[in-house]
Length: 170
Image 1 (cartoon, rainbow, N blue to C red):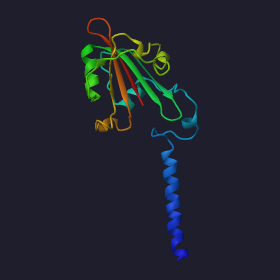
Image 2: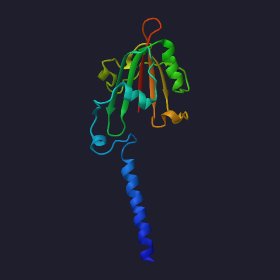
Image 3: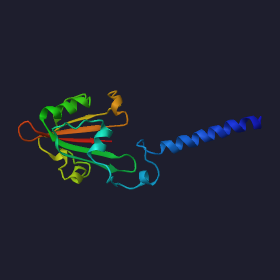
Image 4: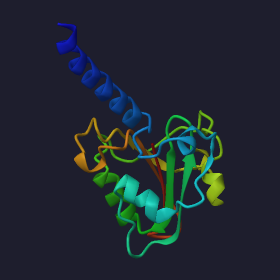
């Protein structure tokens, strides 16, 4: 009986070890020291990598496009910003499948650190008149963004028919 159970037990242990080694990456494919590093900025990631993670298309007319990834022990934060037309900005919010349209948000809370400051921009939560929407892609059955837990979009109106889009995801 013990001889028959040994191969089954060995297989079960092997599967358990395989699963635990795969699940320790935080879902982004990174493992080892890179994942366990303290908070910092991924110097190799820019707007293209962030847009690809969020599955967002930066409009062809966009200017001042900036992106960065803040590396954290638990989950990374992806930042993207650009200036485009108001119509394009609102289209991006619709594409995110937010349950509510962009709306003004009270400035009664402090921003979570100075993330967009890394891009040389003010934090969108501090801007008067910036409109906001948030969405949980898995909750909205957005299969394109299954790896993304949360996306926030802020739209700041600028000159006539121009707006700065701020996107933050994790």
